[in-house]
Amino acid sequence: MSEPVRGSSRHGELTIDQLVELQPGLGRLMPEISRCYWILFYAAQGGNWPLAGHEWRQLQNLFNLAATTRPKRAKDLHSFQAGVMKAIEVAIEARDWPRFEKAYREGIDLANRLHVTTGHAEIRWKLPAEPPKDMDLGPGPGET
Ligand code: HEM
Image (cartoon, rainbow, N blue to C red; front, side):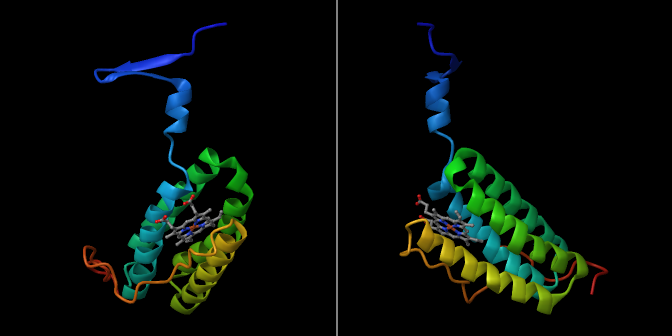
């Protein structure tokens, strides 16, 4: 039998299988998704639409990463992207707050339904009542 492929750093050696095992699953990615989805809401509400666009792209990257490392969840993750995330993208592009809020809140409901169907009924995400305090959520200079 051939030796497993290994990579090394100054800290030691790992096999490819160990590296694969280390890739983040939903338990590690969902807290990041949660934070991006929180900022997304308040950026759009505050009028920082470019920041909303940035968070939207971050979320897409995180969902794609999650679908790669957890292929069993790919169908659910991609359907969330094709439905809710697409509707949010359209609203961001149009800078249309009512449309955005509707799609966003549908996203909360769908995510929580998916938490139930994936065996995590205990995870009920809710939008924090307060905006994040470390980001400027208002329009940028020259924007209204
Ligand atoms: C914007 C949408 C979503 C938000 C805000 C969200 C939020 C969260 C949060 C906060 C957790 C708990 C993380 C922790 O342990 O601290 C979680 C876990 C989880 N979420 Fe989501 N979620 C979203 C979308 C989805 C979607 C589309 C799926 C579809 C598969 C999903 C499946 C799961 C699963 C399976 C877990 C449990 C992971 C584990 O601990 O193994 N979520 N989510």
